Length: 280
Image 1 (cartoon, rainbow, N blue to C red):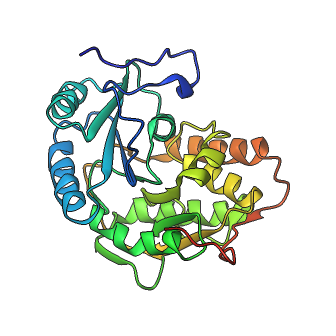
Image 2: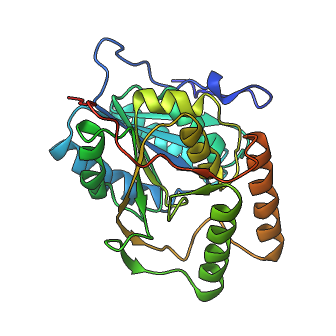
Image 3: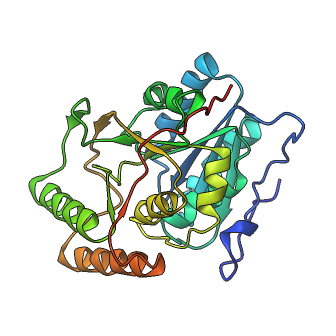
């Protein structure tokens, strides 16, 4: 079976998964796992995710998006996809960034609901039980995991410098771009298929803070978002390391996103449910 490739000079919208899919029987839930050099951590995360979904949501698909890894992640994920038709892989040769990978996965997803989660399993798949009810019948179209809510549980926190930078980033985000959300960066976010299509059709940021653009688009489209505290466990082997140079680059990217959305003043996330919205 040939690996699916993405032309690096074209939109991620052309990405196609390797495995042919049964379009007559779409899944209830799609889970996207973006990966860059995750050969060591992905097996544990994928195994735990499959086991939970088999019990709780048997109509599922998992889309592993290999973001130009060089450690054998794609080959290992391809072997799992060949062995299990519920696992699919999207792969391209160059490392394009987490935002690019998530968008590629969203373009390939077919589920009624679409979740993206991190390969390090910082927020485990079990936490989806807290998010789904708000979309299935709660009037929301996006539900996001949060480390900043009173009910959040942080099993292991980030180091002092990283935590200080995160708080500074949150301050600038609320002051310049988006208010109403305490934690924009937790990598555990659930969408209805319709909301995912609306938001990711306009996504351009491939950076680690692509979430800001995503939530700003949702705010401009008045798509209701609910933030829910989840259990989160920081992995010290995080692929995204922060120093002064990267922090400056992140700040510049925040300003670029703000400018691209033509937001003179900070937007406010729509946090009220839509009345009369009831999904199966």
